[in-house]
Length: 326
Ligand SMILES: Nc1ncnc2c1ncn2[C@@H]1O[C@H](COP(=O)(O)OP(=O)(O)O)[C@@H](O)[C@H]1O
Ligand SMILES: [Mg+2]
Image: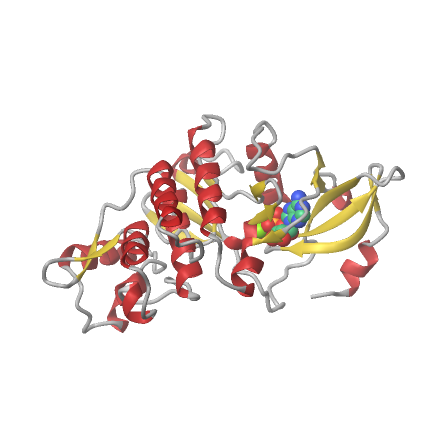
């Protein structure tokens, strides 16, 4: 992960703040801890100047798509452009559950965004080191509930374990995604194009559906393995016991060029994989990823939870029943 480019950035100043050390990285950027002369601590996010494509990432990458009419196609995007979109989406948002944008610039090598430094571990680090506390998930559900009700924000769009830091003051989200108009060009057909910046493992419908992303994160935390690990083709799982309507949903997505949902067809009942999983957890996980086993014991679509308050309530019940870790 460490390379010459990152080493050379240490000590560089952005405004009054000098970069001290790399604290994290993502698909499009590096994040450093930075200090000013009074030892005030900040985080400074710098868009990658080189494509990180050749690197083997330890995190789950965010991807960019263009939706034309109903069809999706993958897209290249510049890290500065992505940061610009992010800053535009979050600079007005004031909520304890999302990191504040304090300062920014999009001027060549000076391009950066300054935020409060969040002391803690990402949820990914939590998941690697052991079972995740139900209290952390409930805190995240309540945060997402608030953010989904904020008209100026509405959705996060890239909720994943890498994009949140579990601090002493609760879970704080960083690094939102985007589902919206393409900003470049004035040609007529641009009106029908949507730019999508998200992580398909958690947003397999390529829609700004934070509720499903949260369900997929809970599933992964409890099962120690993501439900949707990779793209797949429905022909890969021909003999599965799956209801017609779930099959049709998958085929419909495939028809639009989206193969990120397909591996849902191989989902198993959580308690069959993890023996001894309490039935409340089994049901919660299935419902949170909008699945059920129907009367014919086929894997089937489920309406799922209506909102984050409902999920938070279920998580509270787990804690009351003495289940404190997933
Ligand atoms: N304000 C912050 N304080 C501390 N660490 C942070 C902060 N913002 C981001 N990070 C860390 O840096 C990583 C990359 O930041 P992120 O904003 O997700 O970049 P990218 O858009 O490239 O994914 C995060 O996964 C997190 O570990
Ligand atoms: Mg990120």
